[in-house]
Picture: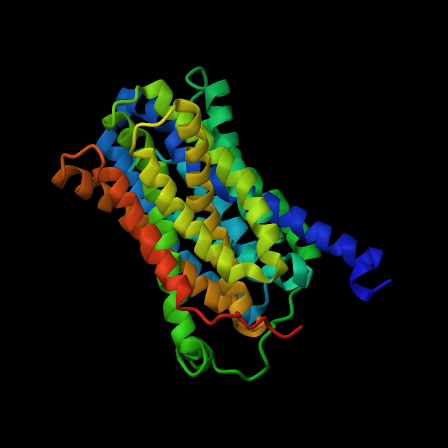
Length: 401
């Protein structure tokens, strides 16, 4: 029996993965709650909200994410994973409480900006924590499972909204988000506090390591790939039903394609992660970007409905799967003492892609009246992401154990 097979270590890895899933479940719940309560907020006449208001609130939330990612990644390497993670969960709980108590749209916007900071902070913190403890031959799979909890949290938000609204005030959905704080004692017990960097390493020097020597080229490429993956993901999830309707599908059909898209992303992402862990991380990451491009192109053509549903599932695998795989590439490329900072800055840049992506699709479909314009626009970040991954080193050097 090898050391990695000992029951205590296996139990520790299982507890880490379970905690990571719970934290990112909360991340997803908080992210999607704004969309869930949107119709109820608009119907609440005293608030004076409009559909445009929801867009502004969404943008304000997104603006906080890069700041949270960068600060959390830096803090994770400086102080260890435990304290920043506990602070981020406490912060996001407080922000959801502020949203629940907000008396007007201005203060609700401020609360959502705070929520965005917390959402942005949790992804690099949890990704670094999972990578630190996962078995070397299961890192990508563990990351895929943990990051998949974001979508589960979003689904839970939608289901709760369907069950509670409009008979219950929309504030209740925000209030439920404050329950995240109960995880803080668990974090304090499970997550190690010791920083992974060497004592005495200057913070400015450590950040500069991302852009010097061996890391420079890889960092620029990984930041670009992260930007493209999030631009692709957020543009497709925001615009796919609308683009499909522009191509002649009714709303019911468009939502069916979106369901197939999310199912393909969840199930296919786990399969892709297993293959990536067998020494094919770069190849599989490149393949998911290309798969997204080809699948989105096929969706713009007239094909039998069952085939198009299957292609939509493949588009989901490519669009969402590439995000977790790019995060796995970053986690593998950098040593443990630099991993949190690298993930924080990389995901911070990626969050800018999340902000830009939906706007880019809006402009592309407005300037070009062709029904296929939206699909061609979807393909651009997918192709650019594939080209970027292709330029990475053939073998991503794993961090020292």
